[in-house]
Length: 204
Image (cartoon, rainbow, N blue to C red; front, side):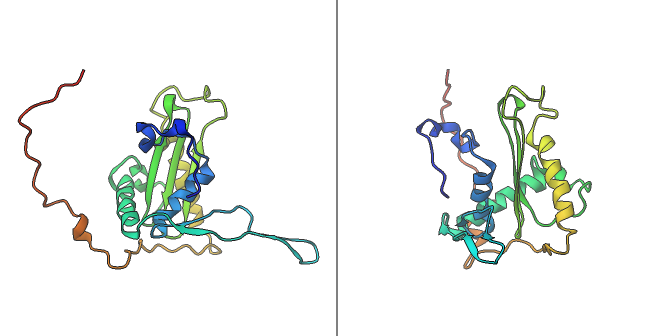
């Protein structure tokens, strides 16, 4: 996914998103879940022509398999849970109109200085960041200082307008299952409860 890790980033909290990453890189990485595990390099400029129509720059597409398609789909299903029953649930409040099938992730940094929301639909992946260059600029509490309150509303109103735009012609279809996908292989609803441990570990 063309993300370079600093050795100082490799810490246990990395799985929670503690490393610094630009919104551009983050959105590029999240696209793999909408593309069956395939990474497509994002670009801001596709083509430049001079006044005579001569092409002076054209971006070169780059893609690579970053994740197994089934693994990517299972993660996508978990991220749909963020919207259906998690921290992104306010997206379903009706305030933003009807929403298409959506997966997402909220994010909040230390001391409520940054709020994030990534929204994924089959046609569009969008990232929103709210914050300041100086992280001393922040909200005083989690009431407003969390991604679900800072960044998610911007995403909701933006998507409301995006789906009204006839030029974009975004569909409301659901995500497609990858080929040969077997949902039972990952269904743990009938799994037995783990046996109670005979001993209890106490950590100080």
